[in-house]
Amino acid sequence: MSSRAVVRELRGAYAFVERNVNLIKRYWGWELVWLIYSLTNALAITYIGNGMGAITGQAIDTQAVVKYLLVGALIWQYLSVIFYAISEMIAWERWEGTIEYTFMAPVSRPTHLVGTTLFAIGYGIIRTLAILAIVSAFFRLDLSGANITGAVLMLLAGSVSFVGLGIWAAVLPLLYPERGAQMTNAVAAILLLISGVYYPIDTLPQWLQPIAMSSPATYVIRGMRSCLIDGDATSTLLPTIGLLVAIGSVVIAIGLFVFRYVEGYAKRAGRLKRSG
Amino acid sequence: MCTTALDVERVRKVFTRKERMPRPAGAPRFAPRRVRREQVVALKDIDLQITKGEVFGVLGPNGSGKSTLIRLASTLLLPDAGALRIFGHDIEKEPYAVKQLINRVSVDAAFFKKFSPLENLMYAARLYGMPPSEARPRMRKILTRLGLKPTTFTQPMEHMSRGMQQKVAVARGFLTSPVMLLLDEPTTGLDPHSKRDVQAFVREIRETHDATVLLTTHDMEEADRLCDRIAIIDDGRIAALDTPGGLKARVPSSNGERTSMEDVFIALTGRSFEDAEAAKEVAT
Image (cartoon, rainbow over all chains, first blue to last red; front, top):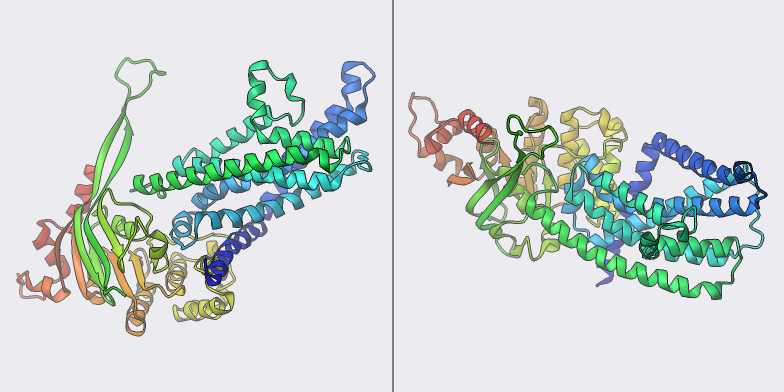
């Protein structure tokens, strides 16, 4: 690829970053509502840990439970932002009515994806840090023994696989103009259920546990807990990080292939716009 | 570069429409409803060639297949049979090359409604790889030429009238200096003043740029005034193709007045525009 073509693709990728930032600025009211919802959700779940002693009537290490739940809530918060930002890239365009213009532009789908991913990672980090800052005012969160470098590496590796899952889910609004966006919510809810976000996966029914092991979120959240709560060294996390990058690469490659196939189908069936 | 701007070779496009049938009388409410699939043929083996630099009109009633043709040329649809090439590039095999040559203005001015015209145009410019330093002055120049006041450039699009939004859509179409411009009923629903502005701009572009224009319309006067050649399309088929003068010459004047394109349409298809649209509505 010539340097001119690279600059052209970079401009294309930046178009999606700038557009999404502008959308956040214009829909700031929605953003505020969504932030309050996420924050109260994280607080409500973490308060369950605070109240465990009172609920069970037994002496419980409340701090450990609070940390366990809080790490799960925050990491899920970040991963779900990545997932929704990618999976809704089609749904947003449908909602605004601009999908045909974006698909008609000389921008490759990987470039479209790179732009959306860059935005998603930046937005996810800012949003999660904002929630962490507010939650810290409610709970005493001691992260002095945490391995922050390892946590950052783990989070980036986990982002790769969630980008891939987002691409898979983005296919749904392309296939089903009316119900596709709702279907992506169902995918996120299933991931939340099976990935050990708020409880160890061995508490799930036996038949569900192999499925839980196939979710990349299971490894991200487990790895993040070992970094932030147990303070495990980065070297011990490398196998998990490698596994996440490998899973993510495969999921992205298959996702792009499936997306391209479904885009072709949508163009043949006239599904980019509902009326033929 | 190839001198045939658009080559449409025996293109056929069929859509499948699904319709849920009513439950049979006496069937329980939870019984599943049968789904009937119906094939709607939008284009029936169309052949068409447009020469570089030409303003080519496709005239037809609603539902005749005009927009399907434009959306095929825009790479937004793929043909079920036949081939469609833009300057020699096949839309199915070389979509990226085609996309670099085209832009489109459609009847529905689709924008990010909360964005301003400048934000929407900058998004389009970046998608087409235009450097911002080149895009910014050009955006302002085209918007001003189309009669928009500078104070509206930074206002949200949702506060603009339909006519103003359509002018921004026209500006977006021209911003990237496409070699082939696809105009899908660009003046439908506009007030007479906005309509004149847009038509004048199309004429100006034709005179000052080396662009080829494919214009679909159901406005007979517009087709007559702007186009070098016109294809009359009815029910997915080309009923006639000639220069506006050539088409009118085929139909003798019946009442001593000049032959209009409407007379031509009735004579060549055997029905009026209104009848053709009503028939399409009944069929669908």
